[in-house]
Image 1 (cartoon, rainbow, N blue to C red):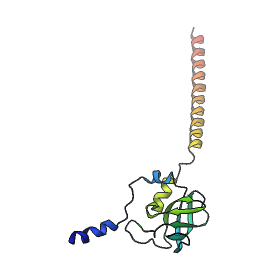
Image 2: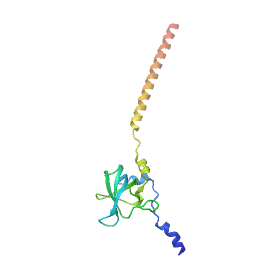
Image 3: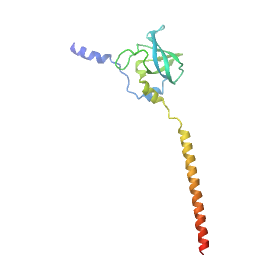
Image 4: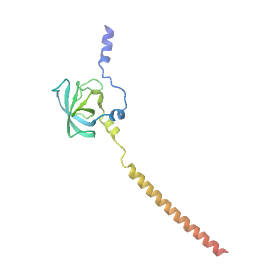
Amino acid sequence: MLAALVLAPTALALECPNTPLEERLAPADAAFVGRVTDERAATKGTGQVYRFVVDQRVKGPVGREVEVRSGERLVDARDEPIVHDEALGVLANLDGAELVTESCLLTDPGALLSASDEPRGNAIKIAIGLAILALVLAYSLRRLRSRQAELSGRGRLGR
């Protein structure tokens, strides 16, 4: 009986697969950083419906406010119910026209934004670098030609 009491808290703990965020983000239909403003029981089936104010859309059909259904009450990594009006990274999938998530698809908002943040401006940086390289090469060739002409001119005078 003592073993059952000792093992019970770990049996209730949230167990999610240890998958990198980038790998969880790729198959998700929607992702955003938002804050829970309301929570109610789902009208069809079991679970809860959460209303979020979206602070930052990452991907998918997400507006300024969005409702997301969950089969069970959403909890954080410590098995505590999620806090209302606190930034939260949410990955969700579409079930028809409805977004659906679960506790294992919740994440740190900063981590979600950094995982989804694509490096921007790489093409322009490469173009600018190539333009600078072309200018340096053109200048170097011009100086080389003028120097060769100067040396060949001196060679003719010296003969």
